[in-house]
Length: 135
Image 1 (cartoon, rainbow, N blue to C red):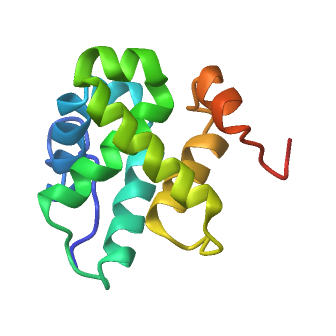
Image 2 (tube, rainbow, N blue to C red):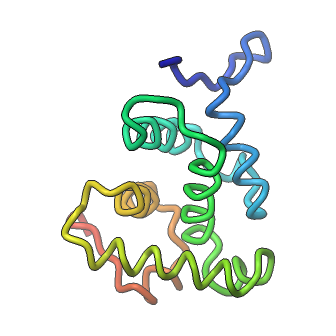
């Protein structure tokens, strides 16, 4: 398993997983620079762990970026740039993650990451009544 790298002064390139996350965020209309590198590194690590330590395929990066992108943009903005069906699908994932006893599920972990990184749009916090134990 290759390590995730963010690059260094343009000398060393970004790792494959970080480039995949950047592409996936762009696809949901979130500029990759709006997502802190530490969050993307954590996302890459979580995705690899969820895939048994192997490099996930592009669809896993896309699904993760959709969820975190929704959390960052909010329902209206996400639906406006992606479409209503995509927003409803992400909302269903959030509802299932919150209802699940499995807090180790990838969606649960990504939601918690976005919440703790303070990336959540206020309307998403209100819609799903999200709280962290540190609040």
